[in-house]
Amino acid sequence: MPSSRLGRAVRIGLMAGEVAIGGVLSSARALASGRRPEGTMSLLSGRNAEVLARRLSTLRGAAMKLGQMLSMHGDELLPMEFRQALSILRSQAYAMPAAQLHRVLGREYGKGWQSRFADFDEEPLAAASIGQVHRARTRDGRDLVLKIQYPGVARSIDSDVDNMATLLRWLDFLPVGLDVEGLAAEAKRQLREEADYLEEARHAARYARLVGPSRDVLVPAVHDDLTTRRILALDYVEAEPIEALARPDVPQRTRDLVARKVESLLFRELFEFRYMQTDPNPANFLYRRADHRLVLLDFGATMALPAERVEGYRDMCRAILADDVGAIRSEALRLGYLRPETGEESAAGVIEIIRLVCEPLRHRGAYDFAASQLPLKARDLGLEVAFRRGLPTPPASTMFLHRKLVGSFMLCAMLHARIDVRRLIEPYLA
Image (cartoon, rainbow, N blue to C red; front, side, top):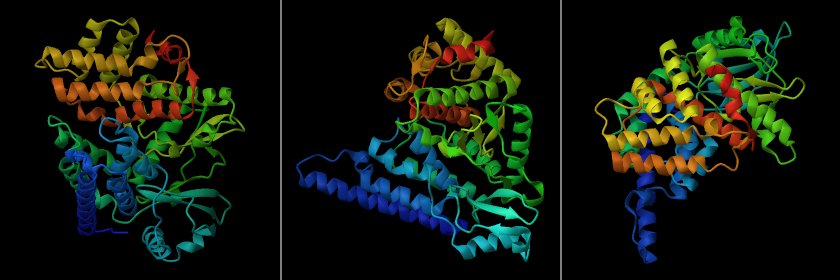
């Protein structure tokens, strides 16, 4: 795995070259079959998606994290086959070779690190974008998981984000008016925080205090004596992946129960805690059947929300439930989704998007997430507004909040849930 910034930049450059060659071959095939190549779309072939996914899996770090975000929320940017190929990034990556793993452990724990453990499983439980997870048992009998960061991830964040932004511009995925610099700066800030496991440990401890002795949520305890800036030590919790609940043999009431917990926690985070875990990757959630609790695994992407902004969202939701277009417009200005200079046609498009994406809140009774066409409708409307009427770039600080909102919807859709979302949010708007 490349750990130097130069090595990673070279890999991204080679990846771009492979994609370009794939685009040329795709165009050639189109011409040979009598079809006219469609410009940028020739780059978005299934083969190129596999190339991109394979290369990002070997790079890991910020580059792979951005690929994960595209696969989850790229409906308006990428064709289905491209997103499907990239979806492997959400659940797997190449693990570090044993020698590289041992070097990381030696650097963080010192010579003779093995003496700390009665047992250490060198086969990772999971390998993700920033680190991989190993099970271990300490000499004093604690059953733990260790999240161990890949070498070079932290120092390569800025260059990875810049290189990926350049690649996306080159592929012509981004609307011309998008504030790429502002969004890239916010991505760098958040990813730097995610790469600091001491900061994640503080987030996990604070989150556990906010949740308290909940019957719905379990936050594994952090073990400070084995946690460093690049290794996070947590209690091992026996539970099943939330994705397993999407099987057809799982009762509907179980899927609905878990979806209600996901959505209820989202509203508590926003309106009660003003503190939100913003990475809703399914791999970050487990379900413990013994006590019907969600187990939260990752607090790297956790953010505090200013009280004034939270009240703005509360008032926006009140306006949404009342279907008061004038109030929606006022709150959109207050929150920065509209600006005083935004043209009337563009402003009308923004309000239309807000009303559409809040469809689960506006719906009375159980909302059927699996049957919903909301993602497709939001994609089509977003494209039409962005490219025809002009869409103001949302405040960069909302990027990860939006990831949480969209990701929570996708979790409920994955579970084929049918729940009354309006009823869940109403207590926070009274």
